[in-house]
Image 1 (cartoon, rainbow, N blue to C red):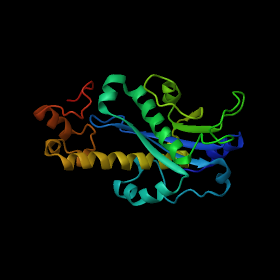
Image 2: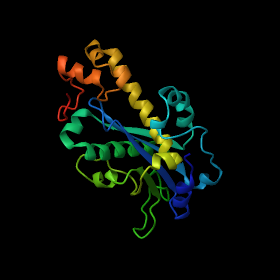
Image 3: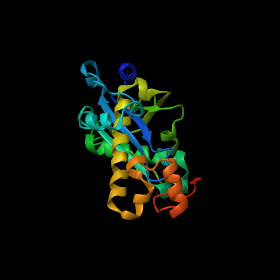
Image 4: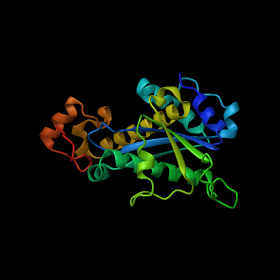
Length: 237
C-alpha cells in the first residue's frame, strides 16, 4: 500500500514542499489529458497519516474513487489538476502536452499556497547549489515536466522545481496515489458531463468509456466520424 517513506526521504534532504504527480487520459481517443498534483509541507510529514484505502486509481473501482474523492481533496496542503486539450495534443504530441498540463497544475498550486509572496517566502530566490525548495515525485521513468519548463507555451513558475521520477510511484508514494485519484475522478466527471450535455456526443458512449478506445467507441467513430474533441492525429478506428 502507498506510504510516505519516499516523501519523508526527500524532506530529509532539505526540500520544503513535496509534490506528487500522476497523469490520466494518455491513452484515450478523445478529450484532454490531465495531470494531478498533491502537495504536503515537509514540516508536516512526521505527523501526517495516509488516508485509509488510498491506492493507484487504476486499482480502485469507479464507485470507490468517487466515495473517497472529497476526503482525498481535503488531505493535502493543496491539490490541482492541469490539462492539455485534444487540439494541443494533436499539435504538440503527447509528451509535451503532459508537461504543459503538469506546469498548469503547478501554477494553480502556487496560487493556492501563495508561493512567491513577500521576501523570505518559499518563492524567494534560492542558491543553485541548494537542494531546491520544491521537489516533485513523478510516476514513471521519464521527466516530461522539466522538459517543458521555460518553453514558449509553458506558464512561468515562481520557484524552480526538482523532479524525481519513480516507476510505480502511484502504488508506493501516497502523494502520487492521491494525485492519481483526484485526476482520474476530475477527468471522468468532465467526460461524463460533456456526453450528457450534448446529444451529438451520446453515440460515443463517453459516460461508460470516458473517451478510451472501447469497441463501441471505435464503431461510433466509424459510423459518425470524429468529433471536435477527438485526437485526430491518432489512429481512431
